[in-house]
Image (spheres, helix red, strand yellow):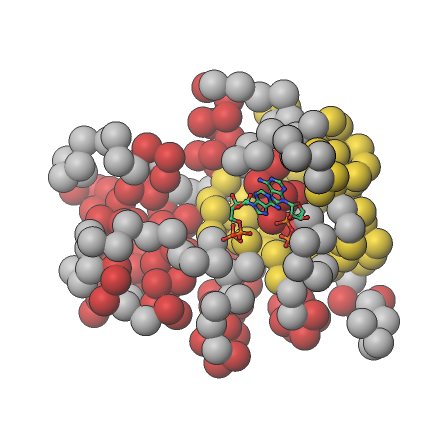
Length: 239
Ligand code: ADP
Ligand code: ADP
């Protein structure tokens, strides 16, 4: 069975922009999917429809037992708890410690500011430290997020997503602000999470080379439509 099934998905923004048109695909558990396409293709809209940061205009999204396209209230919160989101600009809380940023992920990032700050169980703190250690951030745990380099901040972003124990990770251009060496390190961490933890990953990228090197499957989108869907080996060398 598929973890995620998308059928006939469309999104028209309030100003009339048709960002997605009749998008359909399904994702099996454990896949590492790269969504590629030029700026404005609809990649970010697609990811945001899946965790309902954007409300689809039409079509169906089924994630586990949840009707993501039609979900409201409690179901949207459930959906967001089960999907870890990673952003291009990391979206950390800049003035608080790395450890606290990860613990806020545990509460669900939409609740980061409304949770009772400072009250975390010993078990949650141990778990957050273990995840930070795995991502090579043991030395940075008590630093403020804004004291870290871009690559370190994105590793915190990954740690925050992992702390949710998600079924699915949605990464929106996670390496677009990083240099090539740091970008590869981040992609290695994401593939490791996919392989070792069996967490399904959907990663938006505009570098085709990165998609070829790390993804098990590539979905190409152009002007809101799927124009390619297959393994990296089937992608033309000319793209
Ligand atoms: P990508 O992630 O591939 O760059 P986006 O999903 O961000 O593509 O954007 C797809 C299209 O939708 C673009 O034309 C963009 O300008 C437009 N768009 C994105 N967000 C909004 C919004 N909130 N309101 C109106 N148009 C938007
Ligand atoms: P990011 O990639 O970090 O989300 P963007 O510049 O793509 O940054 O988008 C910033 C915000 O503006 C997003 O909420 C996006 O949905 C919105 N947006 C993007 N394009 C448009 C657009 N053409 N019209 C209105 N809002 C847009």
